[in-house]
Image (cartoon, rainbow, N blue to C red):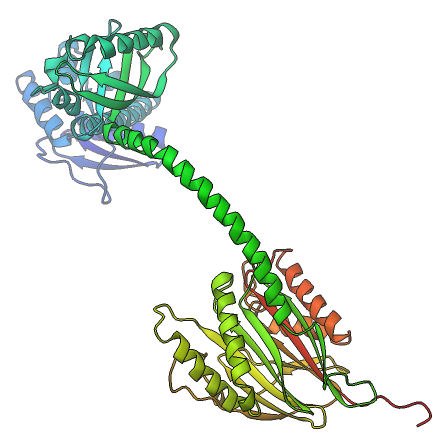
Length: 542
């Protein structure tokens, strides 16, 4: 849509121009008619006109002033002059004043005026773009701290920016025009620079990011990262070179300092490598010790109980994220028929978490006499950890869940210290639900508060059910879409394999979670501990 401002006094000429526009542009224009004495060109529908058409006055005496006023009022808007009859002298006045074209009304066609308007608008766009580019180039040369320069075929400066002049102690950039590098540098730098530029002129191949040592007549040495390219005219012919130099003296001195330290660092690196190898060997030993301290993968309580007696059977799977981990579980004999089952998750993984498990294990051995009731046991365990870790700046967060189960009773005592509640798995129906319903009855993670207290729940646990304790490395694993596996999907996977042997079930559940994660390794330590209460098997002949 063209927006056209028409400066005209004669209604006859206005109608003729409007008719030509209507015939050619067919509604793709908006025209506003203005008196020839207009001091400012108004907006058309809120936007500046695309073009101004000015009909020249017949009086030659006022023509020059008229065109000057129109051009001033139009500003950057292209102006097209129109005269009724061909007069070359009047056309010349209009063009010299700044009109892009001067049309003769008696010779004008709809196609011709349409083409002239289109060309004027496109030319104005090109000129505006060129003006912006010239303005941006001016800002670049004035403000950029890097040195920019243009040279002719003899490597003489034809233009430089302010930074280049300032580098050489000159007040004005023009003071370098016509001179060469030999006027500002010693031969050590000036000659190689000249040879590089002549090679670019000969081959047309640029030099990019060349590190140059610049030696000045006063003995100063500077370092610059320089790029030089061939300067071409509109026909593609090489007319010189241009380039940019970025001062990297500080970086080069730093590199020299670094190089001086490199040999020493290499020596230290070798020492560190040897120590790392020793640490890796120590971790292998630590992993063996940690695994040896955990109960067997399959544990029966009371110890040595046969299928002819009621018993508690425990099955476990433990997969540390690193050589050693922060998940820990143990089984504590409470009475000949009762056992305490503890699972812990020390924040993080690796060596720090493994040291946390050592602290927990030591305290558990001391507190076995208080293991009858989960609430009492966790309270004592928290008190012991606070006493040990009180003066450590960075807290060691430990969550724990503790069960007391009996081979002769369906009653289970449960307490949690910020740990996920276990799952209850009904073997026959494959229904999986959380074990314990009163989250508020339980307490915070261990080792956080001196006076933390822990509640306890009493839950019925039948012989056809299984209790599955776990650490959050399972539920916090990310699937292939980056979403957390979560408790619901973990419970679904558990129900899927509920009919299997407990040990097999644990292995298959973890495999299923890893399948959803696209086969990725677990991001955190993972521990599953399945607990079953088994009755005595029927005896032959009974």
